Length: 626
Ligand code: F6R
Image (cartoon, rainbow, N blue to C red):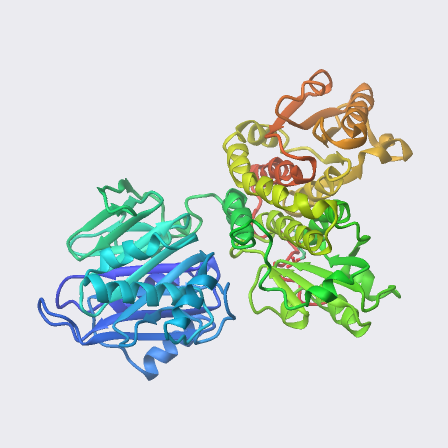
């Protein structure tokens, strides 16, 4: 999500524009919807510069390049550049970065991430007479750093004073005309690396930004600030204590660097899930822990009057909706249907002004889902879009939007968008529960706390996937795999099967475990691999025991049982050929964990077969035809 470049070169070598633009081009793969750069202009030896020039444009880099031709920038040694993936405010020229801070436009700043407390900071700046030119959270940081600079006259110190007041995840880069030859950057839970050149230094969201110039790099820890000049890179903590980055040598080529050294975008995106979930949770609660959904433009009265929820989506997004249904009904007590968007559109659904139609789409452009949303609006329903792409068509055609903040998903097979979609649906469900009162309103804050623990659990899970990868490689010649689940494990079984079909071209079917004896058990023959997603022992209604019985039934008929079970669940051990452990979590949150090994399994098996994991045959990332 967002690309960031910073550069300081040798005196009188004015190639900052070229280096920054090249870095932005190398970061294009991250996905973006606008781009811009800032260069120090009018530099003189050792003195202050005349100003900071900014050029920015919505759309692709080609638009920015055209602007640079029409309105050339000065030669400069110092620059910052940004590709933006819109979060606060649509993808417009005004919202593109860099943003000026202060009234004299002598400071420019770019930002990756989300500043959670930007509302209160902005309100206070507005009260003090500061005027804003964009809708972004970034501009708040730009004004704050400019004001701090006016007081302390030191860009590093100004940055340090401000970051301590910011909440959320962010990388910030700033330049100031009074300090030519300097770029200051700060990071908290958001990527930033330093490239160490000879007589020049670089900053980037990842090493791809500067790999054409240097392979020597510095890794920064969280809550650190780095100040680069042409000669050095100095690091301090947010408390001002001097420290050092961790040096490393980059031995990837440019293509590998885009994937962060991973073999595929899918692999990279699977690993990004802790961040995708955490970012989707960011900024959804106020200081007291109550849910606040600023992006929802539907009144509380309208939401309180909702009598039915219908979720419409396709593919993986549909399975995220199926998963969320269990939680939404449980928390809100509002009946919730989940329907494939293309089926909803062409039947005669019972929908009225008290129906809330929630569409889920990563791209926001899926034609089937778009048509369902339009149809729902024609029927008078309220429509909310859960979407990962700012400014896309589906959110624009909906009454309200709740963005997932998974960052751009490049691999065709959806992974991090799926877990972010479940997270966003849960946030919506909890918000509705809170609005409507009742017993779950009180629990909402507790569930939010439990949700906040999920990213670190996913992190732990991802660190222990070696055995799953081994199993996948061993199964490269398998022709059919079955997946069983129950309750929230059922849609996970379906999604696990979909992943395998899509990228490994293996026949795969998911079933509700309770359905086995009604037909699918006939498919079980000796050696048939079956993944079973086992609910945690705490799941109500004794479902755990029922699924354990299902495992016994298929094992007795020769199935090879690959069991996904919670840490400490010993009941499954006697009947499992393999046990894949996931951290303990409340039953409704388990899907955010149990899907992970199935994603890893599919990606590893596809690559063991020598297939193109990111671009499977016959599939497109965005399905814009019905
Ligand atoms: C599966 C996959 C597809 C999409 C589906 C909907 O890995 O990517 O099944 O989930 O085409 O796409 P969006 O979410 O963009 O509407």
